[in-house]
Amino acid sequence: MKEALKRGKGVLALGSHVGHFLLLICVLSHRGYPFSFIFKEPNEKGFNELLWDIMKDLKLDPIPLKPRSKATKRSISTLRKNGILWLALDQGTRDADVGVEFFGIKTATARGPAVLSTRTGAVVLPMYVKRSGWLKHKVIIGKPVDLEITDDKEADIYNNLKKFNSVIENEIMTNPEEWWWLHNRWKRSYKYQEVDMIE
Figure 1 (cartoon, rainbow, N blue to C red):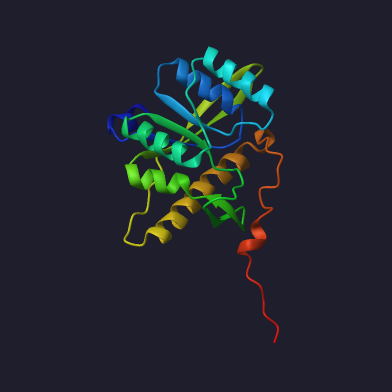
Figure 2: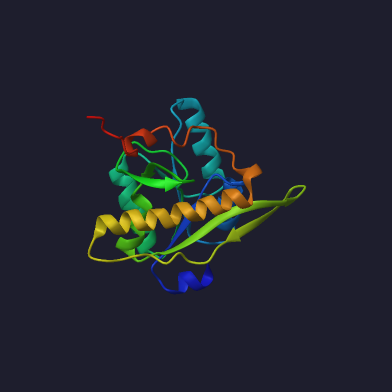
């Protein structure tokens, strides 16, 4: 990660809900890395306020997912200031999604990570936490993901997201017992399935 930051273009930390990702955010932030993360605020007002108080006490730098225009501006600003932006790609999405294979089935995938990385030139680093014993964890930072950048932007978005999904798949297969994601990741897959037409 230090080598990636030396490039001066920022780091897009490609994350997921594998392992104790909140611990990863806290540890790297407290070690002095310029670490920000996309944060989806809960609907319940009291719980949301509690989370903001906790994050403030921990001196974390969350970027609220909504409004999306503001989140995009802050994300780009973070990377252009050579910061680290962590976001999880294993979440379903309704907005600006692309149908990309995830464990062999095309499903709604947010295009944001692919757009941000190519627009800013940020280095994309896979990043997650793996339990290594009782109350012990290890931060895993993978090798940079080679991005495809051509004249066909839509094809680049799809191909790069497919690479990102492959990284997440590998993390899950390596550490399946720690992928604690409860919603149906494939519930919008029907939008991308080919339907045989019967004449």
